Image (tube, rainbow, N blue to C red; front, side):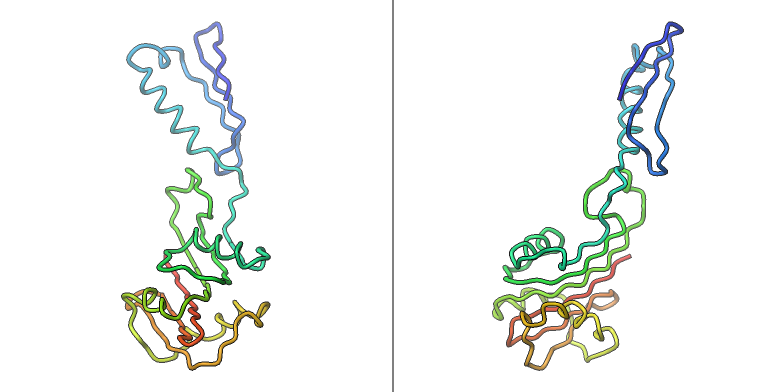
Length: 192
């Protein structure tokens, strides 16, 4: 950001950042806005415009566990993005967030859409900590396909032999599939 004062008393603001639409921001402000009682207004306006225009165009909107080689990397990444109720030792995930996974001020006014699908392996004794507020339900279309899609690449790390239990959150799009004996929880959560 560069401020230049012209002989005519006009202050030129040039900034190399781009707004949401990719246009460079360039403002011409009269000198009177930078002096006296209007200094606070000028500072606030300048900060607001700068913050609202900050965008690098590289917002990561999807996180996929296939991009992380080790269990430790996958677990650490997932722990940053979900509400954690206990420790877990392995994870696979496909997370989509329309606002992205890095905070950018120019997205504060946009609606958010999240589609989180993940599976974790944990101590079987901790499973009930992850089921608070969920209601046990019967199998339905909501549980088809997505669990197998999550583990299809590293299937050898996810031995599933027991009969699954199905859970859902009433009036929400949250579905949980539990293999209690193996200590495995699949979760799908969609929020608008």
